[in-house]
Length: 201
Picture (cartoon, rainbow, N blue to C red):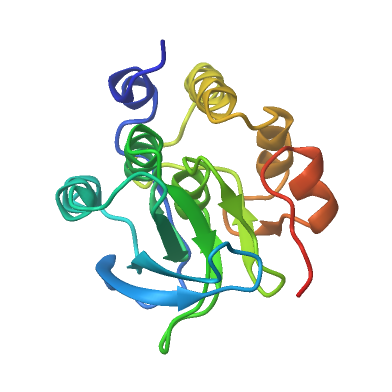
């Protein structure tokens, strides 16, 4: 059985970041948001905006305790630390939350890099037509990863994707983009890799 510790042994201190995103730590709040594809259309959601840091998993766990199963977590984030993203995804799955990507007054409907792995934790995952789900090859800010380290990380990520019900071939697609670039999941790929079914309004 995959546990957060199993994952973190392989990817401890890895950070997936995007340099052009404003560097503020993820902020958590709650508000009612409306999307055409939801039932009911308007729901009270956890709003998660900003960079995923080493402190975000605990903050998310503490903040989300009051919310019932089936609550949607709305992500608007350009990424952050990979291990923290995985921990948030695991917490989301344990709490039986759903996930969706959306914008706020000051951020776009993007969920990139480490955010994507947190998003994958949703029991139901929604990708609205205006949302962007982006992936790229992981990297470490503290060291150059050798082949053996990369293989261990890949195996851990494959197990995580399988646990979340996502086709592990998605990792190959993610790794096709250099760490300094971004590749975006299309509507066809979202269905093919069992991420979500995107529906037009």
